[in-house]
Image (cartoon, rainbow, N blue to C red):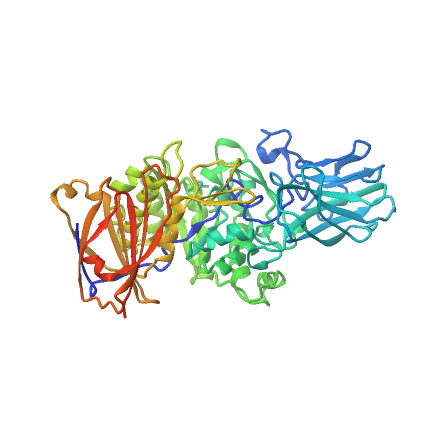
Length: 624
Ligand code: AHR
């Protein structure tokens, strides 16, 4: 293959092309990115979280007593907050009785590290006493302990710190009242002090770092389907997810579990800031998933029109929460949470692959117009509909064109073959219409994990997204995270358990693109030999320049089972440094563990280079 490039020919492309899609699916939030170690800390689990499927899933899930003489019940009279209705009611007869939490598949602790414990407690029969708090191993070994102050007759929050004596993946947490009698306990929490960037109520450092390493230009949250819910009552309401933990409104997760919303809008904004990513909250367009209503499947509906003004106001309030100064109602709440400076929100997604009906259109239009009037500086990203097979998104596009929506969200999960044969997907897109946010995509092999074949199909397709970076403004692979044994969707970009993080080979491709992004695209002419011409869809190139570093980045994908010789004819380039860095990701198509290898080489290598079979190669070259 011969590639001809001319430095004087380039076009501006999006500088936010690669971002991340975060949804609380596969235990991505509670038990995942959110560093809380206690499961069902608020006693708010309910069988409704599982749509009645798991009858063991109730307020006492993940909790037990170590002693049969004591009583453990759930009560709701005079709770710590109306949004955290349930609490544990204990009647202790014997010293040494413990209320035990099993964590999310155990509690993983590390020797020498400190853990912040907190609890709300009250003694209901006037017998004051302290609470002994222990981390305990499988054989009863004490891995760390601390004591709270004496509990009082009224609800009071107690804080204490534990230091772990050993590293163990499956400890449990014991709360041992140092008195007999009756007491109530709620919001029992244990956090590692070492969270990402050390924030209180923070994120798991290893997982958050793995996301930040992608160098995402934006992060979408809280979904996906979680954003619009599977019924009106399940629409994600950002206002329920801010403020003190006891005042947040936990909710059913449509993927069949519970959301504490401890990882809420403040924490999402904070992570975006820490990771250098633009926040991209996605709000339901006044309709839940497929316009479902509480009436059940087949019964379409949206937020009643009489409630829409309030619904729209909630969205406007979100912009004030993120960007308003501290004298505004919602800006003040952000400042109270510890962030007086604005979060500098620039984008809001409205809708998530909704069924495009009149119900949708009416509500979307109201939201879009209100946003445009009050906050014209915010880019509203609409949706063009579901990602079902055969959808052409036409109705969604028609609405977007009619209203002049600046950007729309498209989703597709397809086979590697689809990605290989549709690299011209955006070449014909009308540049005068809305820009595109490819908000969810992945190459899927039914029943198989991510491997070199899927990852290279994505790498190949991403060359076409860079080429079309004048119309495609943003992209995010989906889903992002999946916890072992709690996965509702496959494949995902990163798998994890309590102690390990396992990025897939698809993650490596995303990382290579994220770390080697550009803002100008330099077109290349490709000439192939006759036999390569027959398989030309399997060889791709993308050349971009990053105007900050002035680096030229050449990306080459070879999805053929044979090596390909490539040479470059590069006109008007000025390479200041003859040395360059080459990164190659290669492996057999079914290889799940291929990792990129970086080597130093000379720029002159581009005169004649061999692209290995099944490979993705990147050169990063210094120019003036
Ligand atoms: O990414 C998983 C799901 O796929 C998302 O929640 C939804 O938007 C899509 O159907």
